[in-house]
Length: 322
Ligand code: F6P
Image (cartoon, rainbow, N blue to C red; front, side):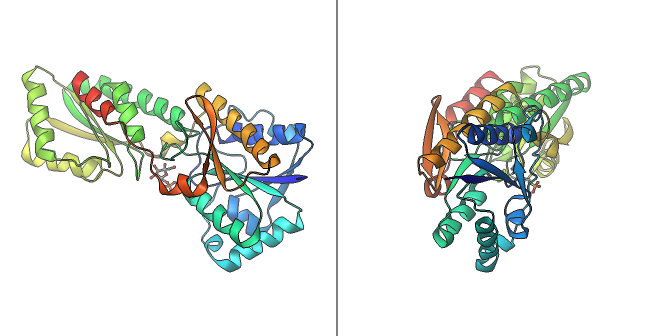
C-alpha cells in the first residue's frame, strides 16, 4: 500500500474534518501518500482528486461541514459509473480508500470492491447515530448539543406564554437524536419511529400534566416518526384538545452544522487513525467504530443490515422524570 484516497459521503456531520485530518496525518506518518476526492463518489467518477499534505488539513479540526464536500451520486449506482470511478482510482494509483459516511456509502463501497478489488475501510459519519457497530457516530454528540441549546431557548418562551411546543429534530429513519436530546431537555414526551405514536395517549398525558399544574410542555418529535412530522402531530392534538396553545418548531439543518464538540473531535481522530492502520494491515470492507471505548471492526454487510437498537429504558426514564 503506497497511496490511499479519502472521501466524505452522505449527509455531512460535524467532526468529518477532524476525521479527514486524522486520516491524512496518520497516512503521512506511515509514509503513505494521500489524495482527497472532492464530492465523494461523484468526484471519483469525474476525476476530482487533490493531493493532501500536512498543511492541507491544518486548522480544520474545529470546522463543521467537510472540506472535501459531499454529494449524492446516482451514477455510482450503475456498473458504468463505477467502472469510470475505478479507472480514475487506477490512474491515480490508489491502493485503498477511507470512506467517511453511512450505510449508503458502505453499500457502494462493498459493490465496488466486488467489481474492482480496491479495498475500502469505513468511518461512521452521520448525526443520526443509526449505524450498527459503534456506540456513537461522528457528529451525533455535536447535533445533540445543538438541539439542547435550541430547545432550552424554546423552553423560555414556552414557559412565558404557557404553551405546548412540538419540536421536530432530525432522524429520518431513527430516533436517537430525539431520544437523547429529549432526556437532556426534560421533554414531556419523545416521539420516535421505533415506537408507535398514539395521539390519544399523548393527549391523556398532557391532561395529566395540566392536572399537576404544568403550564408548558416540550414534545420532541423525530422527523421519521410514524405519527407524521411535528406539524401533523400538533394538528391532530389541536383537533382533539383545544385547551393548550400549540406551537411547532422544526430545527432542520441547523443540527448538521457547527463546530464539532470535543467528544466528536476525539472520536473522529481515533477512527481516522484506526482506518488507515486497518488498510495497512490488509483489512477491507469493514467499518471501524468505538464500542465500550475500544476500537471495533464490523463488516460493511453487518453495519448495513443490522440496526442499532433504541434503548427503551431511556424512553421510560424520560417519561418518569417529566
Ligand atoms: O444526515 C442524516 C440526516 O440528517 C437525516 O436525519 C435527515 O433526514 C437527512 O439527513 C436530511 O438530508 P438532506 O440534507 O438530504 O435533506
